[in-house]
Length: 167
Image 1 (cartoon, helix red, strand yellow):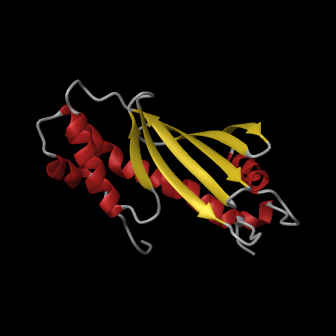
Image 2 (tube, helix red, strand yellow):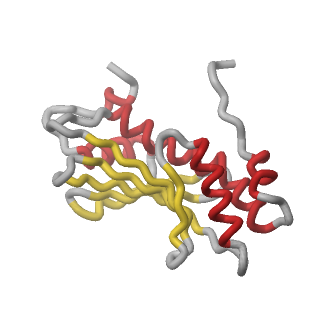
Image 3 (cartoon, one colour):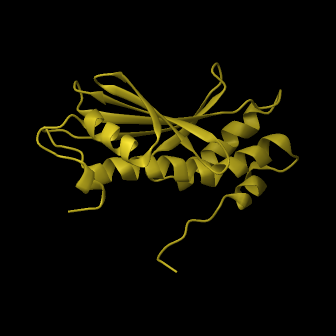
């Protein structure tokens, strides 16, 4: 049994019930918006991230979005979109997009659970961890690209490198 699964009873649990149990365990601020949706706030090094998970029974997908505020200076959207392309080339699970009307940077991911599969607590924890880690990793690159004379390629040099293994 995994560490995360110690806190969850899997007998026919709804995916959002598992998320709620994990959020309570980690003491994340959360609000169960509906039976099929939950929103959480997680403090990172650079920002506070709002993470929303929603279950779609229609296509059996647990959708996650992680958002943070970003208001690019006038005329920098082309640099932002170029930086987004560079960032997304490095993201294998999930992708970033920018919602200009809400002034939000968004990391999205969908976990398909077709055939009445159940998401494990570890899978959901990994989704949330990956969203926060990607946001933390690329936030400095977005900032540098938008608020300096650096090119998007130069800005990517400040993205925190992924580490493998243990010290």
